[in-house]
Picture 1 (tube, rainbow, N blue to C red):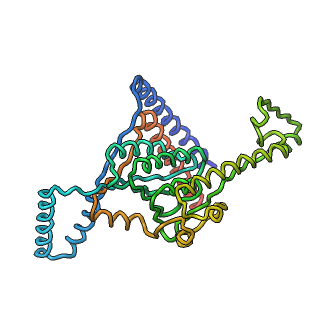
Picture 2: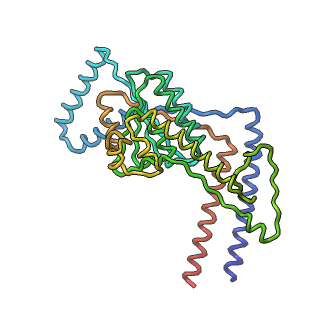
Picture 3: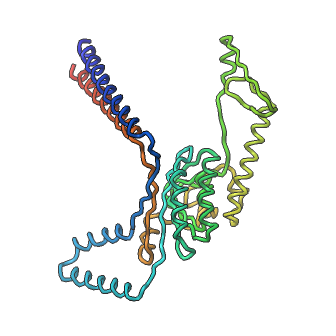
Length: 340
């Protein structure tokens, strides 16, 4: 018990100091941040250099000096000849989308697509490395619309799915003229789901009234606290069915080869089965595909990064510090218990 009291006192003092420092830093950040506007930065990395570096590192380790020297000389000669001939390789723009339930990554995707379309031509290609299990309809609807911009510009779009592209994720994937998947990636789930608890009976049991006023017959259908009606359930189901039908029509528009009623059941398929259902076009990892394209094209990874304000950076750092502090304290407590 004495240890617990000492530890509680130590923790209270430490937290007080951290909070005091945090308050000062936030005040400074607020003063410095006045009048400044937020923004972001477009980052572009040439992936050919990455692949070249991997190959050269391995060659340096495996080849003798004479062979390595000859190889480098031949490469330099080939590069010089390519410059003289004015050879222009096609460009491949590589984008990444790691989706959460709100499709938050669309905030970066919209800027990345805008930037790429200022340079890309029909001779180039956009490759999207996509990972998402889906989420909110409006968020993924916007994300899909950003990819539609690429198709409308006449730029070839290839979507690579290494792990999962389901529900809203597949809504995005289906826009690709070519969909590549790994054998055990998860695809499909062309369906719509909504669920919510209802606490009406619990409130009624404790004599708690809940009132909700609306203007419009269907302003609310199912609620968490009110008493749900059969008419409300029917309307809610009708809305889900309409959304599902729109989803099916959207997928069928970009993947006309699909038997849409067969695959739009809400089921998921692994890549091997998805290939048979024509949900994907080829089984291949994104690494393999990009390594192949790097041989005859210039690859550029494009990523838009939002700049965090000083307040956000301070808050994030403080949160991480508090997590480490609590973890250290719990570790010490567990060690004390063990040795006792």
